[in-house]
Length: 301
Image 1: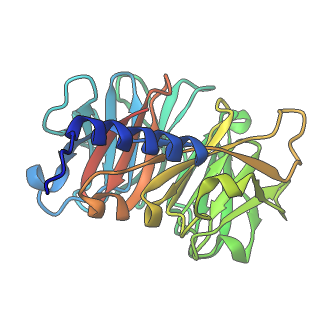
Image 2: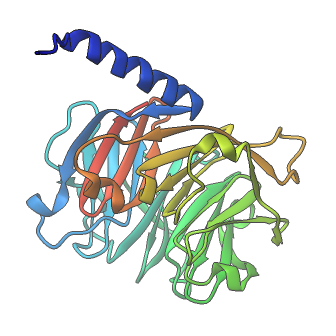
C-alpha cells in the first residue's frame, strides 16, 4: 500500500505550525540576511572594531590596518579607505555619532578623541586616555570606557570636550560593550547585562521572559540610544537579537525591562551568527547591521 502525500498540503501545515510557534514566542525570522562585505578579502589582515551607519554609508574602524573604511549601504561594493581620514589617524579604535553636535567622533589609540566634520576634516580634542576601547555619545557628551581598569570617562561638550573621570567599577573590568541613554548599560566580562543609574549599579530585570523560549545566553553586544524606545541585545548562542522595551521617560529608575520580540536567524550558516561582536541600526530603524569576524551582515527588519 502506498501513501498519497500531497506535498503542498504538508508545506502549508508546516507553515501554520511555524506561524503558531513564532507567535507564541514573539519570533520574527530574520529576513534578507546579506553579507555586504568581507573586509579581509580586500584588505588582508584587517579587522573590524566598530561600524557606523550614517548618511548612506557605513563607516568601519580597523585598528590592525590603521584605516577607517567606508561602504555604501544603498549599493554595496568593495570597502574603500576613507581618504579624508587617511592622514592623521594612527590606530582607529571606535567611531560614533552625536546627533546633538551633528558630527562623528573617532577614538584613536595613539592620538585620543577626534571630532570628524561632515567633510571629513579632523579636530583632535583630547590626548589618549588610559586604555579606552569603546566610546558612545549622549546629549552631546562623549562617554569613553576603559575595560582594563574598569573606568568610565566623559568628554563634556559644554567645556570643549575636556575629559574627566566619570566613575570606576569592578563590573566595568573586561566588559564587552556598553550603551548610554541616561542609564549606562554594560555587557560585563561574563556576557551579562548590568545597569548603572546615576553612576551606581542598579537592578536590571527582564519581564515576560516566559515568552522568550530561552533565557538570554552570553550576550556579546547591547545597542541603545536616547532616541529609541527599546534595547537591542545580541544573543549569539541562540542566534538572535532580543528586543527589550525601555520604561517611560519619566520612570528612568524603573528596574523592569519588558521582552517585546526577538529576531531569530534560521539560516544554514550558524557560524556567521555565533561570532557577532558589534551591531548598529539604520536611522530609519528598518535595517540591522552586524559584524561577524571580518564580515558585515545586513538584515532587513
